[in-house]
Length: 259
Length: 292
Image (cartoon, rainbow over all chains, first blue to last red; front, side, top):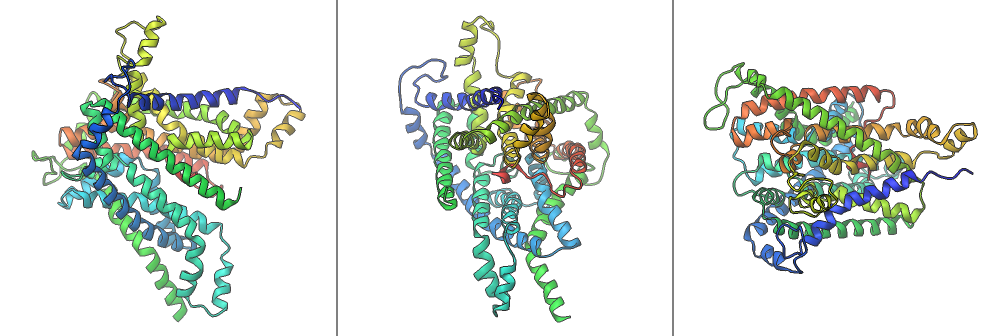
């Protein structure tokens, strides 16, 4: 047996170093007294205190959560029906339908943003939380559909026929058999939609109006205005949340697959 | 007949919500980009009445060829570097022991899900004129104290690679995981060298993942505007920055629209190329976020 090459391994660990170096530095600097972070000036929690005192951040967080929950709810319903339709029926209509669902996934965010902005301006719709929510439902729907569709494709549809043969009507078959079986796909899709909505900056930035600042938009304006230590602190909190969420998700997944 | 009719109704009921929603809020807005490219601007920042070719002619701005060229070079370079790094990484993750694989995957997924604004901003701290990296480089006499690390086209490339790399690794790993590694041993038993086996057996074996990875890096790169906006300076704008500039600073929506129309058309080239390359496999490249 030939010895394995060590190059891929070395490259992988160097890449991970590359991934984490800026992030770790940012976390350390969020506790640093020195503003620009070139040297260690001592430990402080001052930036976190300032952060919790800033009203705009709480407003932005509220907006973000309102948009994320609404967009997740709506896109989960629309995406699930879309996936069932795509899976159950074939033909021209479904080909066009699939095209409509798939294309937004391969269009850069900036194009989705500018096109929706132009659409709203052309129809004289006032920009605000409603337009941001509409935009989020639009891109989340495609992701939910794909998540549910991939679950449907793994699933043996003959049990639906079995249910029908045993006398269940379409309604019962759908709610008692189909939905429970594809629910992991629906949950995965909803989680995906929620995270994407929480994170989205580019599309929201284009279609947001006064008073509909979301957290990413607020972070962006902080980056522009240059209050570096505050963004460090906020980023550290968000990083910790991301870290814990992924950890929890992986633990649940592992338990379920019984590894 | 009756059951046929009911089936048609069922199909329409299930299809209508997404079909109507996406027609209204995705298809129509995309078409509007092209329509508004033929509209004049109005001084209030809206769209003026009537039709004109002047908006499209504004694309002949002497600065644009350079910006378009830069966008192409930066996004293609980003894609090539990301793929070149991601192939051996995917190979390594797929081959190493279970606990190590879980750890490396976990460490790759975290940046993948972290807000990209934060990841871009983190580089500002690293490259800051008073930052750690600058001090280290000056200390080692590699750069002079007044060299700027931020606000250069090279910085934009570095940070673009940084933000896009996880999107290349994960689809490639998903493909590598399904790859039968005994094929490599077989190739080597038949006399192929290690590198030869890697290039002519492993790489073609993960071609479906390669396609997704390329698309998932190239397309957002062409559309990127936050990276050049935050860490790039004058002389590193990309097409996305022109769109944002026309929208938010100049308040000239028709001009932004014309630029967006140009970007949409230029996007079709790689898309058609990839879809043609994928013909017969009957599977579209999946977005990276779906793979995980």
